[in-house]
Image (cartoon, helix red, strand yellow):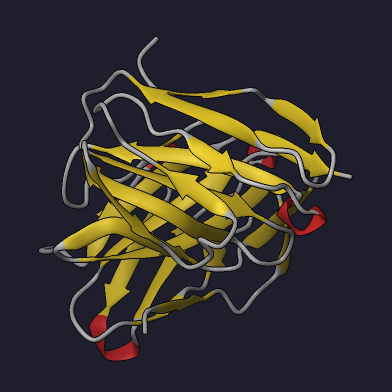
Amino acid sequence: AQSVTQPDIHITVSEGASLELRCNYSYGATPYLFWYVQSPGQGLQLLLKYFSGDTLVQGIKGFEAEFKRSQSSFNLRKPSVHWSDAAEYFCAVGAHGNTGKLIFGQGTTLQVKP
Amino acid sequence: NAGVTQTPKFQVLKTGQSMTLQCAQDMNHEYMSWYRQDPGMGLRLIHYSVGAGITDQGEVPNGYNVSRSTTEDFPLRLLSAAPSQTSVYFCASSYSEGPGYTFGSGTRLTVV
């Protein structure tokens, strides 16, 4: 069965520091992979997505993620975090040919220290 | 404005009551789905649809019904509300295979 694991429930970084949020997935074939961000009381906004091709994908707000098939990972990175990046981040996986379904990880809450 | 519109934004129900959460999109998306979000559990798929007249169950379908009579609308019905259905509900839509879902702003439901 498909599953997504975000090992870090809560992460705190200083403003200006680099950030990496981890995401591991379990799926038998090449999946579609997504990162979403949710600010308090808001809906989810798509940061970036991977379908095929270049394994390093660029997203909005300066985020990027790298698909590593051998590690079943899709980690999200940002070189310099801004206070406005404080939010909850969700990794999700969708299956080729059945993308009516997205499976989400539990989420990682990012706190940014001034 | 184009997007996914959910109504109502907040709702309080008594146990046993029924209600319908509305979801509409004006982007001509084929795919639509409903999720519930609970603390520490991420989002879990309730029901989804890949086109008008086609629906299927997700991870947590019990206690919920859906139908898709038009491309634009995908209502979620709670048949007999239970406190366990207290949650934030999100509707999402997408054009076709894999471009990334657009989410509504959510409905916060409390069942007392």
